Length: 99
Image (cartoon, rainbow, N blue to C red; front, side, top):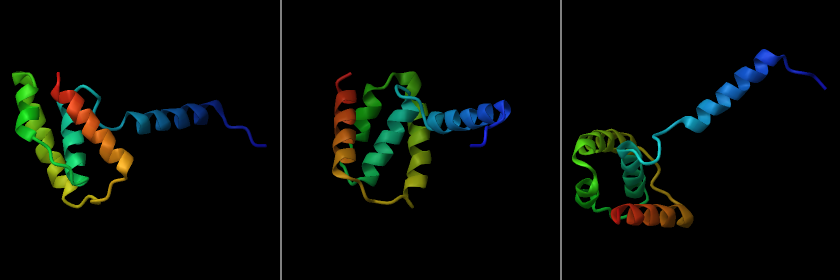
């Protein structure tokens, strides 16, 4: 069995950490925009104005900008979602509406 040099182990761990950290952080307007975009991809109805209204005013611009960015990307996204993903998105967007 071959052993890896310590520097390669650190490099591999850093690479994996980068994969996990990709994407917007939960609780940010960018994360909410990503959820909304994916919900559209899944064919769900989303009340975007309601979502924007519940955001703090200083975060609304960030949401709108991120949502526009994701909309361009999602134009070519697959339109297929599994039932569990669709249900998760509905629940997360519904829970967020109560805040």
